[in-house]
Length: 83
Image 1 (cartoon, rainbow, N blue to C red):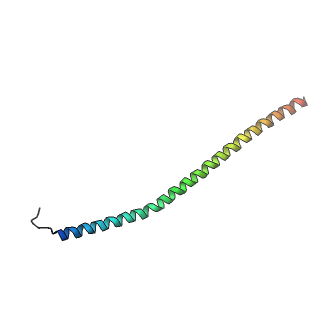
Image 2 (cartoon, rainbow, N blue to C red):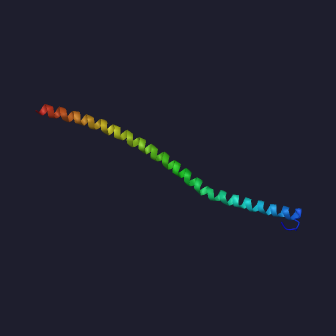
Image 3 (cartoon, helix red, strand yellow):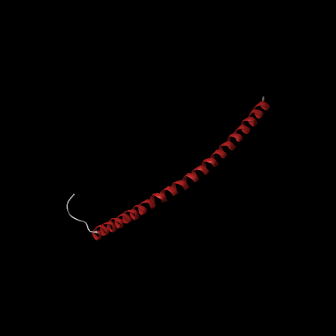
């Protein structure tokens, strides 16, 4: 170490400067995170919508399968009656 002495005033001013710079960096990072949080919430909403659509399509598929089963039975009866 050098023989230079550091005064408390110099040390205090340096600590204040570093603290201000750290706060500035924290504010910038906070502002940079905001768009990512917004994008994350938009993706969650989209995921919810897609989930509800998937559920609706599943219900429609079940109904269409039931309807197809009925049509096959009706066709079998018609075909059996025609013979």
